[in-house]
Image 1: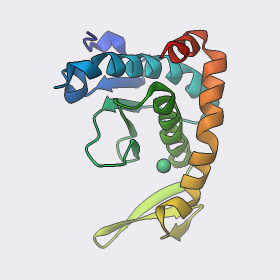
Image 2 (image 1 turned 120 degrees about the vertical axis):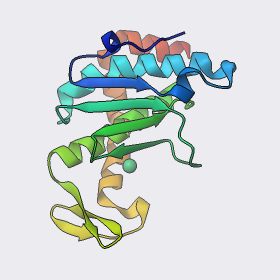
Image 3 (image 1 turned 60 degrees about the horizontal axis):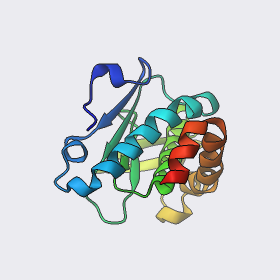
Image 4 (image 1 turned 180 degrees about the horizontal axis):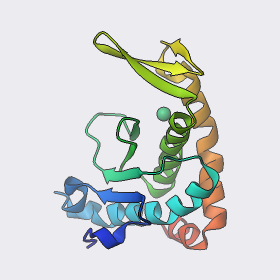
Length: 167
Ligand SMILES: [Zn+2]
């Protein structure tokens, strides 16, 4: 069982957190899967940090996301990515890459948001964009790049490659 300590941080500026639910999961059968995805996160981040323009402080939470059909998300205000711990490991890695593409989009300022009244509006290259999820240019880019990035990680980290092949 993975116990989370401060020393588990990949480096000073990246924190990988196993959420309480994922760590002590009510379903013990999921434990191996959760621990594998946690390990994949630890191995993938140093590789991704080299090729993506990521925020100086980055949190990655490996957790149970409650909403249906939501496998990951990225919060710009706290520079935190969340990826569902239950995903099949190959998918998990792709979703992690997807969310970190969003991290890069925010870090470089191509994607931003402002509050208008009660809603948050996304800006792409400084232009407000209100459009269906799959049509959003930042989503199109993240979906387009996630597989290549995952492949790159696997090529550059033999250990992760082995973990994914066994899984
Ligand atoms: Zn996305």
